[in-house]
Each structure stands twice: as structure tokens, then as C-alpha cells.
Image (cartoon, rainbow, N blue to C red; front, side, top):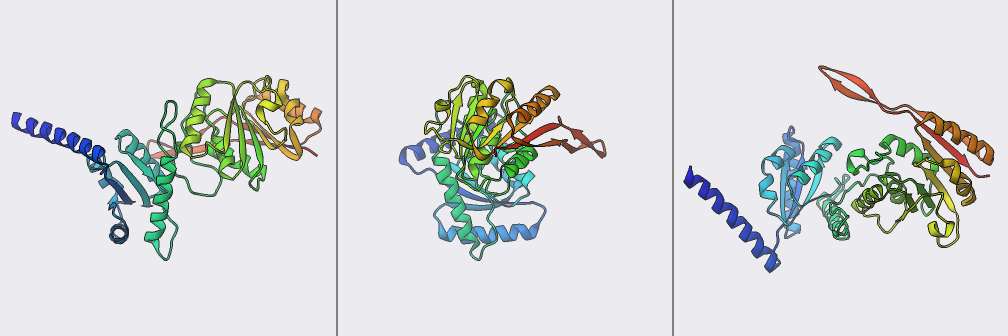
Length: 346
């Protein structure tokens, strides 16, 4: 037993020394990892064939593994400076599982999106690996900012909730964000104001569509969570975070060029009556004002404010229930109903 323990200890020490030498000489190893569902032998053969082609195109190590095998060999991949994991044939739930496992196992893993079918699929994968590398290197690793980068390349609205850090105020659900962004009808390039940004998820959705976003938050802890989420998606240059209460902020503190907003979303509705008039005044002609409310009292107040302002208003009540396992069956787990108000300035 003692000899065995000594051997393990020596192996660990050797690994530490090897990594120190690699850091000093600049010869850290990197790896492209193609992941596929373990239940399909065909998927494995396809991934291994692509991996072989990639080895000829790059000096990096390339491996094709199932997600289960990746978990079994986690210690091996912790030896790399960075692992760019391409979920080639994984389902969305498995991709989330991969990210969680990599983080908990301290594997320096950046997940690049799975490429669409391409005549030269190896080249397509390499492009996404390069994108992931560039994105990762652009994220600050200083205090208060997460170094992990999230790769979500889909153009559809509604980023999975699992990809966001949650503030103490919670998170605007994926389905609600999808509705909000769809109703805003942006084309890209619009100026968007997100009041009560919380986790920053709505701001991220708009920024991904090419909008210039100004996000206001009155809570410092929430603000830091939003900052981390924005950095995780590589959107720090498109989203300006503003600390303060909307009712206390002056227009020039929000928008320095004196212009107006094309879209305003209000997720933080405390004291709505104190700043609603200000929101209408800084909204462009034909601009859209969107308010999300959970409490009946806030919804009633919002409806009255929309009517008084003369904004044409559409009201939508969304009840979300998601399937959840209960024993051998499935039940619907409900969340709070959401009141969504969509107003347009005519």
C-alpha cells in the first residue's frame, strides 16, 4: 500500500513539474476535442475520421471521444493548457452537461459550437475553434469577471437559461426573452435601454442581434453578475452598464450623445410610476416600450401608466409550465405568470 501511495505521489509531482516546465518554455499543450453521443458507433466513426483529417491540418492534438469517455479521462485533459471542445454530435442538454462537468473538474475548456454540414467539415470546425480561441483571449480575467466563455452560435432568440449566471433577483426565463426580443422587431443597430437588467440576460439577447445596449441596475451585486454574463458572451463592447436608480439618473448619464432609444425594456418595475414619464420622453417616434411585471399590483399600475401616456398598448399574459419527472411519470411544474406590456410611441 505504501509503495502504491508513493507511486501516485511521484506521478502527481512529475505532472506538476512537467506543467511548470511547459509554462516556462511556452510549450503548453492544446487540444481540439470532438465529442459525440456514446450510444452511436456510427457517430464515433464519423468523429474519428474528422479528427484524423484535423490532425493533418493543425499541430494541435485532436481527439474524438464520447461524453462518457471524456468524463472518465478528465484528469488527462486537465493537463492541457486549453481544451477546445466541439460538441460535434451532442444534444443541447449534453452540451450543458459538458460545460458544467468541465468547470467542476477544473479543465481549461472552451466550448465551440458544432458546425453546420459543410463540404469541408474539418475546415468548418477549425474556423469555429479559432473563433473560440479569439473570443476566449478577449475576455478579461481580472477581479469580478469570469474567464469562462460561453459559445452559443444559434441565431434564434432565447439563449438557454443554463448558460447564464443568476443574480439574486433571478433570471428572465428563456421563453420570455424570446417573446420580448421578437416583439421588439429589431433589425440591428438600434439603441436599446434595459432597465433593471438583473442578470443581464435580456441585454445579452439584444446585443447579439447587433444592438447598442445601455443596461441600468440599482443593485451592485446584480450589476457584477450582469458584468460577468456579458463578458461570458464576449459582448462587453456592445453593452454599457450603468449603476443607479432609473428615477435618479439624468438622461445624459444614460445616453451621452443626447439621442433617444428605439427600444426600452423594463424588467425592474419597482417605483415604475416615478420614471415611466422619463422613459416615454427618451423613446423615439415609433419606438417600443416593453414592461414585464409579475405582481398584480405592478401590472395594474403599468396598464394605467400606458393609458395615461397615450401609448398604444398590447397586453400579453404568459403562463409557463415545464415538464418535470415525478416517480415514473411526468408533471407540469409552473412558474410565476408574467404580464408583458408592449407599447409603441406614435
